[in-house]
Every structure is written in C-alpha cells, then in structure tokens.
Length: 246
Ligand SMILES: [Zn+2]
Image (tube, rainbow, N blue to C red; front, top):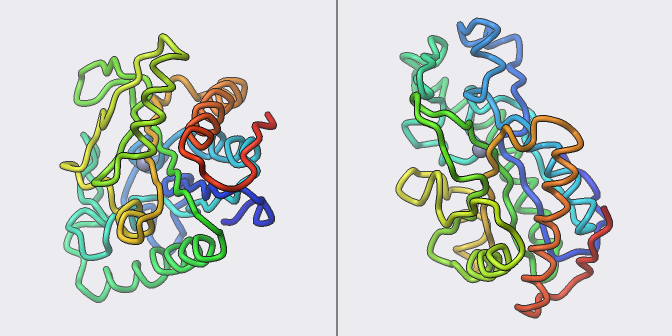
C-alpha cells in the first residue's frame, strides 16, 4: 500500500510487516486465531507509527498488506524463512513441505509487487533515504527484553550513527545499536536490496511493541523518532523537506 505519494521529503518510509492479513486461499495456514493475530504474523503498532512518521516527515510510505507468515517481504524469496515454518514458539502448519512452485507463486503474488512498488518510489525520489519501521515483542522465548528502540544498520551505518548520537542526547530510553536483531539474523534484506547496494542512506528501526500498542503511544513515538531523523538529516545535509508536522 502507498501513502502520501506526493510527499516532497527525501525519506521513503517502509513497513514490511504492517499487516496480519492471511488471504483465504491459504486457509489461515493452519493457525488458530491467537497465533494468526500474534506478533508472529505481523509487527503490532508498526503501521500506526509508519503512517505518522511519513506524515511528520512529509514522506511517502510503502507498507505490506499480507502477513509475513505467507511471505516475508524482508527476506529474499529464496531464503529458507521467507515462509517460515516456525516463529518463536508458533509452528506454521501451512508452511510445512512447500514445493518450489508454491514458494515461487507466493513470491510472485506477494513479494514482487511490493519490491517493484518500493523500487519505483525510490527511483522517483531524489537523494532517497530508506527508513524501515518494525516492532518486536517485549518477551521472547520467555526472556524480557530491556531494549526499547533498536537502531539497526548493515554495512552503511551513516544514518544510524547520526540517529544514535542524537537519541543519546535527547532521551533516557533504552536505545541500542543493532538490537534486538542485527545483520546476523537475516533482517537486512530490504536495506540491502533497496539502499545499501545503491549507496542510499538507510536505517531500520525496531520499536518494542508495548510502547506502541495504543494510538496515542504511536503518535508519541513517531513524533520523537521524526525529530531524531530530521536532526540527523540536518546534520548530514540531506536534501528535501523534512519538517516535523505531528
Ligand atoms: Zn518486522
């Protein structure tokens, strides 16, 4: 889904895991209702933050519309976990024993349209800056996670470095580099595919989902992240209108 396509900002805001929608043809992947709506299926709260962040930066947003359990937009279609068989404690019966044809069909229906849409938006933006928004569960495999906001990067850390500097000055929140995931977890696909390879500035944000469960929380978090991004842009001399409008 596309939002704010006329936004003049250099920023292109992306939310790959925005939706837990599973089309009926996949029979809910054999999941019960709880599993199909849990954090395994999507990133709760991330879409709300993405919308408001795009608005605040006056930037375009590109968001996924189908659950990552069908096809994960932040994985290469060839990856073993592009349609994962197990997410944390949840087994996904509908993803067990998929044939190459079934994998290719999901990639064609879900991954490719998203990839093309995002690539087109990036090529339509002068000096594009890719910002991806994710959320993570506060308790993972029974352990509490203390990190509240992760600022993630792959080989190109320019924007992440600037944002971490600014966040350190502006907040007492627990902000960490490449936490709770990093390049070793295979989460850098969108950054690599759409930014790192072409030299565009980029960053991936991971927000603990208990901090963005409610709309007022999403507005609050989007507001201060927009400020960090805007200040980072100013520091780095990024072109485009990045006024914060929330
Ligand atoms: Zn995610």
